[in-house]
Image 1: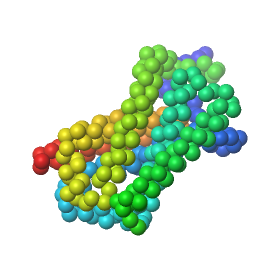
Image 2 (image 1 turned 180 degrees about the vertical axis):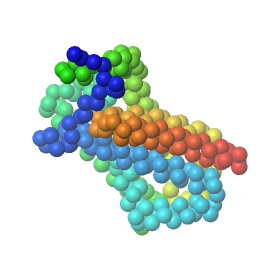
Image 3 (image 1 turned 90 degrees about the vertical axis):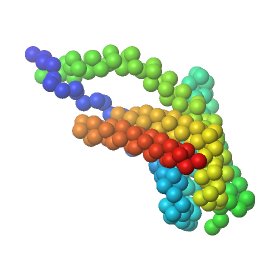
Image 4 (image 1 turned 30 degrees about the vertical axis):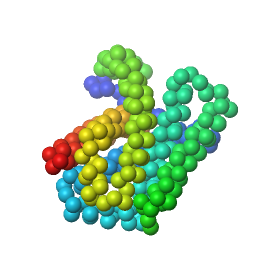
Length: 137
Length: 128
């Protein structure tokens, strides 16, 4: 006799990282989740920046001391890398949404080039910050 | 005890629900992605403008109405996009009580970020 279970049956889980054979579209797909999750930390820090600014000069100076320290700059660099790679990875998904780019060869190329573009944007952003003297080590 | 036990009345209901909500979520994911392209590039430009300028420059920047509006819009759309993204990851990898707890934390984090942003922009506007 079959009975309605008292609670919702367990939802199926997605396959985890270890079941995939390594290929670039798998890597970029995982990186899209990793960079997206890292960007959450970025959003928290931007909100912290804004609150420090609103609270006043003393707190903001304290925030800046941390944010402009070598470790702080490394964190901002990582977050900007995550943000830019997530941005270009998102472009890949939007291209797919139009129905284009699903042929294996093309999908591989788009995965590779969107990741490279994300890295280039990040390096260009920091090159500008350093060459204009806005950021110094 | 047959395989039927996996088909509860509640899950049938939730499938029917998701059939109606799915298109809206799909559109919201794409819509926020599209809007975030220019907003993210503006945020990079804003970070460049504010970097190295100290307190006074940053306050002056955040008090320009257009900048304040774009900061608020960028945070609002980002938090919306983030909320949906985290939810997808939770739904994929977590089950049971842990799923419910992390979904709750997701709501809490989103609310905290929006309240913090709104509060800061309000205070900065008041001081202008």
